[in-house]
Length: 216
Ligand SMILES: C[S@@+](CC[C@H](N)C(=O)[O-])C[C@H]1O[C@@H](n2cnc3c(N)ncnc32)[C@H](O)[C@@H]1O
Image (tube, rainbow, N blue to C red; front, side, top):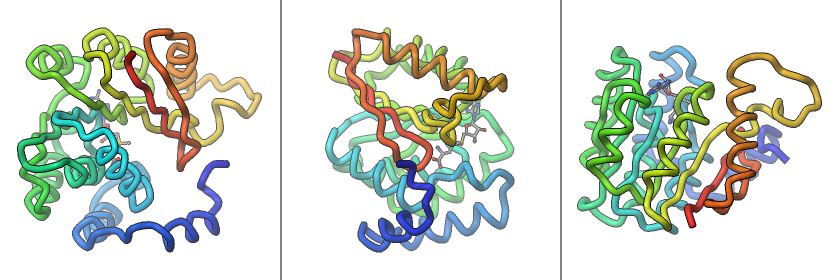
C-alpha cells in the first residue's frame, strides 16, 4: 500500500502531529517560488523523519539532497539538542538563498550545515572528517548505488541509512521493463541492498517508499 491514496493520506494527516507553522509556510513558499515542488518532503514524510531521528538519537546526521531544506529541518527538529547536527548536501547553487532563508526562519536551523556541491565529490571528505550515525539519501536517483557503496564501507557499525523514493511510484515492481536511468538506478540499488549481508534492511511503503538500512 503506497500512501498515494488521497483518502488514506488525509486520514493519516488528521491523526498525526500537525505540521509546524514554519514548515507549513516553507511548503507554500516551495510551491510558489520553486520548480519541481513535488520533491519537497511535506507533512507526513517530515513527521516520520523527525520520529525516526527521535528513535535513533543520532549525534551526527548527513543528508544527500537538500532541495528546499524541509527534510533537513525535520531531522534537526528530532535531534536531542544543539550539540547534534545535520550536514546536508545540495548540488544546485541557485537553491542556496532559498535554503538559507528556510534555515534562518526556523529555531532548528542552527543545527543544520549546508554544503553546496556534488554529493559524490563532497562525500569522501565529509565521511573522513565525521562519524555519522544516520544518513538520509535523497539526491540523484541515478547514483544511489554509488552513494551506497561509499557510505556502507565508511559508516560505523550500528549506523543507519535511510533511502527515499525506493519504490519509485511503484515502477520498481509493476512488471514492465523501465529503461529510464532513474528507475534503473533505484532498482539496482534495491537489488544491491537486498543482497548485502553487511546490513539489515526493511522497506516502509510510505509515500514513494523509504528503505531503512542498519549496518551490522
Ligand atoms: C528529492 S530532492 C530532495 C528533497 C529534500 N530532501 C526533502 O525531502 O525535502 C533531491 C535534491 O537532490 C539534489 N541533487 C541531485 N543530485 C545531487 C548531487 N549529485 N549532489 C547533491 N545534491 C543533488 C537535487 O538538486 C534536489 O534538490
